[in-house]
Amino acid sequence: MTQRHKDLPLVPTPGLRPLSASSWAWLHDRTDWGYSNSGLIVSGGQALLVDTQFTLHATEELLAAVEAVCPREEIGLLVCTHQNGDHTWGNQLLAGTEIITSASGAAGLCHEMGPEQLTLLARSGGPDAAGAYVARHFAHFDFTGIKVTGPTRTFRGREDVKVGTVLVELIDLGAGHSAGDVAVHVPEEGVVFAGDALFSGAHMVVWSGSLSGCIGACQMLLDTGAELFVPGHGPLLDRRGVAEIRDRLAHVAEEATQYARRGVPLADAARRLMAGHAGRWAHPERLFTQAAAAYAEAGFSRVPSSTLAMVEGMASLAC
Image (cartoon, rainbow, N blue to C red; front, top):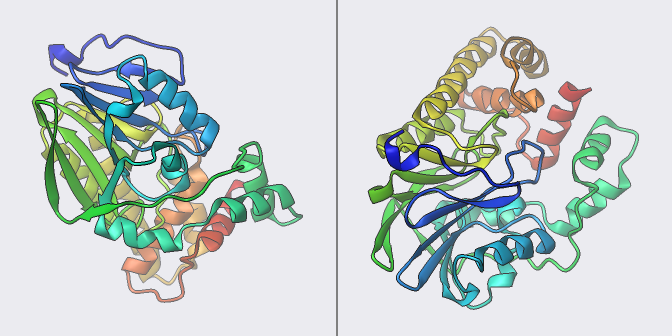
């Protein structure tokens, strides 16, 4: 990292951490499901927020911290990196703010599990592995009062916006972690808010069925030339950390594709991948979703793709 990013002040988490002259990150520094990072860019009496939080309470906590930097009413643009609830279910608290994401990301909204369905699954639990898995990771969240609020505008490719005097580049990463991921790049300050195109300290979950898309997104992030990356979950990353994620995904993709070509059943392949690639990162069961994506890209038609089917696959590995 260059001098501008060295010795960043540590703050209690969750907390708003300054990154550069105009950029802040709301960080949890934890890898549990549902605890996501957000971003803030402020300049000249204007502000851009990157993602909200999983619940209304968590989003209010974020916005209270933001008000120590700028008035809430200065937030004129909310960029959603993708449509997962842990990054968007607080959107309604920014009424009147323009909400933007990629066109492919917006199209994926109709496939997302809503707060009512997730609450029902989490609280019902059940004797099966999937029910127990959902209850363990999500039952403690309170989704009361959430009205899913989608984007008001979309874009394709790349789009530049100005926040005061600061140029911000929105990058459509395409399908990878989700049906459409977006990165927010502050070129003059070498900062990228990557959303769930990056997971720090935890294995990536792949909802889109495109593991190659995840690998390509990592390279697109590196190609920005940025030095500091805010992942969707976990601690900050430098260029080396992003390259490590890209390379790990590539190794998993190569091995999973070999299993697919040899006719190894997906569940068996996922277990082999977890045995070989779990390492010290959290949630190695998410390797099931990476294996499923590799199998789909290898031409296998009978690959689970629904959210519930993916959860069932992860739960079977977590047992």
